[in-house]
Image (cartoon, rainbow, N blue to C red; front, side, top):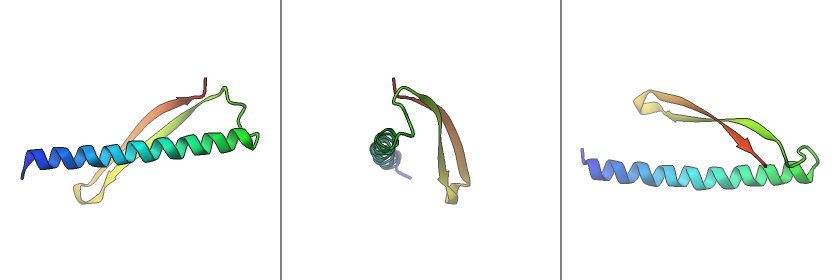
Length: 68
């Protein structure tokens, strides 16, 4: 195993997840505000799950999204 290759591939994966997750959340929030489902000043819980089947890894991360 090459630790540097592992580290770089994990970082690349996490960067992809981070960027795409942020864009997806932003679009969903903008749509919900435009549709009147959100006022734009809420905070709500969010959950992210990291699953890697081959490693039998399934980890849940909890957080909060705040609009103001």
